[in-house]
Structure formats: structure tokens, C-alpha cells
Amino acid sequence: MSYVVTPFEVNSKVLGEPVKVRFVHLLAGIATRHSDTVDCIFLVDGRKVTVAIWCATLAELQEREKKYLRDQQLAEVAALFLRRTLAQGYDPTQAELPLGGEQLCELAREMGYL
Image (tube, rainbow, N blue to C red):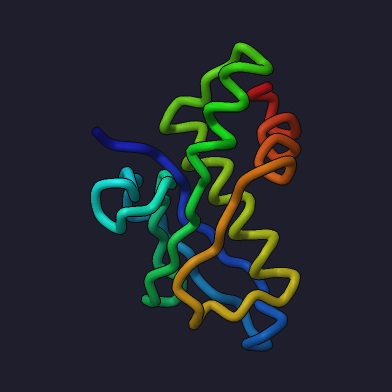
């Protein structure tokens, strides 16, 4: 399955220059890393960065809000999260960014998915 997340550039406070970000794919971290996450993989100036979305938060959303975020929506929320995190000073040499709880809900609401 193919998901469309437009490549983007963002100014990185840590690197002091713009970095290019490209979405690679989305997969279940349960199978690959034995974690309870859905992983959105990006390349940040060629370095792999994983935005790990907690499955527990997704299940809670389903129960509480009666909403289910589709894979395309998860990829878009992860891209927004990564963009903001890079702009705020995240060091892209770290491999994983966890995303869950109220932070995921806020981003999904902002994007009109909840």
C-alpha cells in the first residue's frame, strides 16, 4: 500500500540549517521491533528516523472517541509531529521519536481527524 506524504524541508535548531525530510513507509512495530507501536519511517537528510505511534493510544481513541485513524492519517500526523519536533530542536541523529497520549490526540484534532 502506498501513502502520500509530501517531502518537506524544515529548519533544524540543532543543525542550524534546513534538513530535507522524506517519508519512507509505515509498518507495525509489533512485528519488526517487538514494540506496541505503529512505526512511521522517515529519512531526515538521509538518516532514518522512526516516529513510533503508541498502539495503546490508538485503541483508547477507538474506545473513547469512536474514531479510527487510517494509515494515511497516521503518516500525516507523524509528519507534522516530526516537522515540529525538528523545528524545536530535536537531534535527528537519534533514531526514535515516541508519539502517543494527548500529544497524538491534539495533532489529530488539529488536522481535523478527530
